[in-house]
Image (cartoon, rainbow, N blue to C red):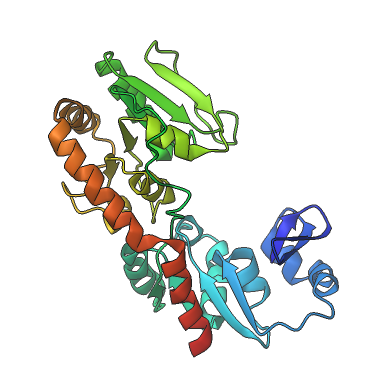
Length: 305
């Protein structure tokens, strides 16, 4: 595994992690004058296949490698402006790849239309042994849980507006409020900032439901985690609609529709029977995306190559 951070290497759970310095202009530098750092790091290692998660920088840096090359596009990496210089590097990386995978059907369509690139859909996954219903954790009857980055694109300010309209419910926000790009969260009596936590499973189980009002997503993992814990969720499309059938495993609304968000929260809070049906369907659907099943799809791709 090659990633940026400190220099050196470490072995963890049978995986050898190689670190190279995080430099400005990663794609250009590691393709030119800093390429010797890559060569030094990987010296003596025989590589059969390179799988780059996001196209840049590594998809471009290794575009001419003799080994087979796979690129997985996760979403935000393929949306530069029409005439932005980064598109040149992005297109070159994608065209040199032996295979391109994406987590969602809508990103697959976008790649084909925008770049003329064929891709294979392999979804993100969830650890259903870790994220599961826990009978030992008491459920709260009035808690809406949000898990994610505190950035505008995640719709967190829309959720705050919903909290203003629903003072009878508590809104718990899990995430790092000091991360880059985070917005300031207004102080409200029914909004609790929990911060970054290590064990999300407990919070999913404590909540009555979860809300993810993102303005756009590719294939969001937080929704799957909540569903694996048997939670009904309110979320936006596209993105969450990759694995939620409207009204079956959750409620889908349009991005930025605060009124619909408020109505959906109130509906699930006041209709426990309907919420219980959605919870059962959610856990069942999440099981289809267990990492063990997703890994087999990647194994098949690697073997075919």
